[in-house]
Image 1 (cartoon, rainbow, N blue to C red):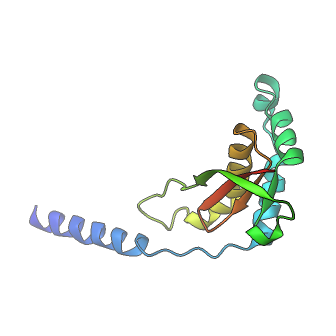
Image 2: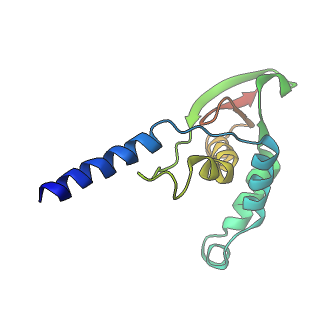
Length: 135
């Protein structure tokens, strides 16, 4: 029983040690590519029951995504701040955070902008974004 308890403590310590200091290197080109893939790919059930493909297309055509404030050519007001934090498994090796961010960050920012009836989103950092409305 003591050996099992010691083994459990060692395994839990290793899990915490390997997942507590993860970093993510995100390629902006890959972020935009994954966003466009997500917009164009909709399952058959979502098309039949929820018309999800139409909503995605509206979001893609009407909401702009910027990587920093200097890319915005118009004056704007910040309406909301958003944060996308994917669910992280205790064993970060199964699905690293960066992969989940690549697939969903742009879409979550654009969807929040659409839901708040705004014009664009600015990605500030790995997890944070701002929702803006043009003046």
